[in-house]
Image (cartoon, rainbow, N blue to C red; front, side, top):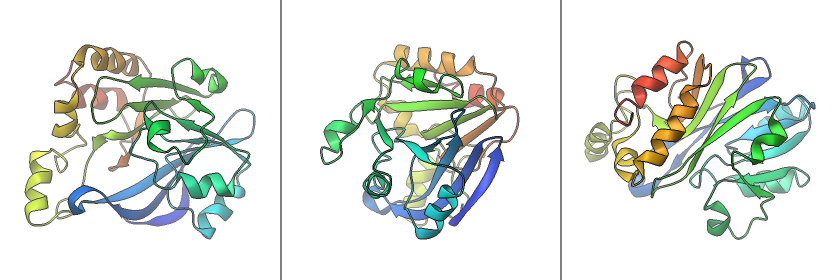
Length: 234
């Protein structure tokens, strides 16, 4: 999960870019990853924007015009300002709770199942509510049959964390044998009925691949993988 600023084609009309490591609460280091999607109208949607370097900007501009910037939850907002500055005409989409957290940014709308109509030819989305940590919006890219998760699924390689952080990460299922829902997120779902209904809608997608912001992408049997990952909830 090292930093690679190049665009990596992941499917028809879908590219991934690995960014620099960021430091979160109590010194935990997280890799960053974004996705770039070419929509049917020719424009681009940037999911979970990472740090905007000159190399990344040049590569993205070489694909097409950036028309949408998407923060998939209220935790993935660190680099929105620089993307907003670089692409002032792009629409900035926020999940529930982020507009209140980032009052310095002028968002163009909240991500809801109804708002997805603007991408109906390319994307579906499900809003996973019921958690006190964050409301996450999960996307499905139809052309590549890829589901995009931000933080609800994570996996870090052995040795990524050290000392007491490694112990916490192991307890939190962040270093499990395959990507998992961290234990803290499981405990944070105070409305499990709402979360269960959202995952059922996600499981209805014909998913083949799964991308996470923090973990190695799943390349086959995506729906079966998601079912295993959320078996504790279902």
